[in-house]
Length: 396
Image (cartoon, rainbow, N blue to C red; front, side, top):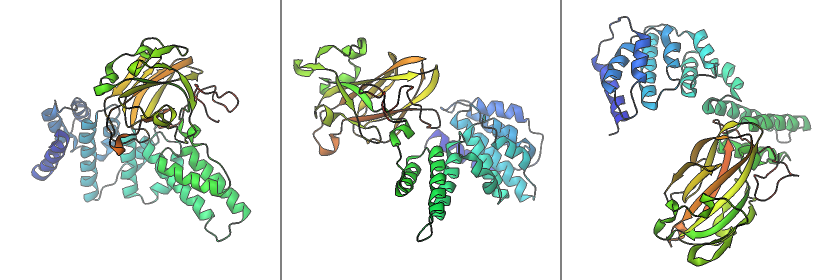
């Protein structure tokens, strides 16, 4: 049993065995103690005592407790959420009211943790049936992905209603296009984007998925370097030491290899190395691209691949993982990095093993650049006219 599950069970036991006699809760002190617990459970005993005290706080303290989520680790959030729910349940059972005005103010303050804001919305919706209609439409560009998703879902349904007639009028179709376009601007989840794309294309409007998600399409590739016995991930082959796109290398089995240009046409930016290069086994490939940023900018790099990999930004290793053929999904791996103003170089190492099973033949990757909400960040030179193989390409 994990420590987090154990923590939840202990909290439940305390609720059942501890009386709820009121006493003055030191809210600030209890929050501080709970936030000190670490993900490995160190400080659990003190946190449990603090949780018991915090659970006796008044509903007026809810915004302060919810603010304790900001910067807290998942285990601390678990304690704080349990305290919030205990306070609310006790108050509503006694016929009390929540401080709706203060909670709604907290909800609309986007500086607070998205999980705390989502919990706040759920509390408000529980006691005020009109709250979702009042709140969710304002969340279409919210940094909380969950709240944003709800807003997008409403727009999708609104667009479908405009097209519900057997033969929608031109005015209804135009209105639906505008609604779906607004939904697309806010959508970050692939299932919603696909639904909106389907609706817009049915109305004669194309959707540029690579630009919407921020997938990098243009690369220079070189392979194969040796990955026999899966040794290649931790061998620094020449592209890691010095990037020279005009160089010729001695690859696997002493074959001379050079960089080749490739621009993927896949709408999810997938580069199929087995097709573009060759279905090498026990091989390492490198892929490099440039990204222009007008300013220094913190971003997320989101990678999908079924292979072992490493990613560098401007020569600095961001992250890597040794794992083969456990599937490939959008945003499978997330890495934080900071683009410098001007030209940035992104290098990826993708390793294929020697398995011969049919399900283990895929050798591919996809990479996108975005902010923490999944909003695409595009290279400053990314236009139809300036896009070239070997750069981050696509359409505005």
